[in-house]
Length: 153
Image (cartoon, rainbow, N blue to C red):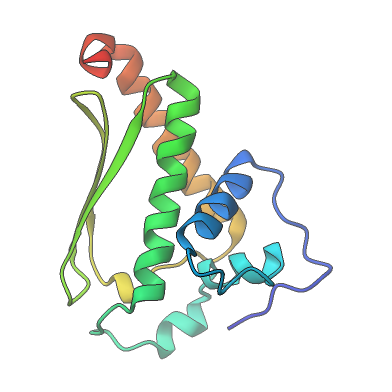
């Protein structure tokens, strides 16, 4: 993996703080307590070279599933802070790495993503991760604004 170094500047994006909180919250045994923020975020960055080295077919491990849940959990929290209603992520992932994630606000589904090849989950950079998350949050908040009655239900 490419190392995020001490000179790496984390993007100035509220999503970074939220994904760090979510990642630490999922770590109920404190395995990652001694990791810096850079070290904690490092697994979310997967370069093209790293992706090429990964097998096309692979089973996701528990650490990867936890990162995926932290990522979508952070998106849900950003949606919740943007609209004031509870946003709940729900997952179904097969042992082969295929599935779906949805985020609901009330009775409104604001995010619906098919998941494929989750064993290759990652972003080329933290900036790209934040950008993709911000797109999902923006679309979700737009849906909540368009359908407030369903979001309140």
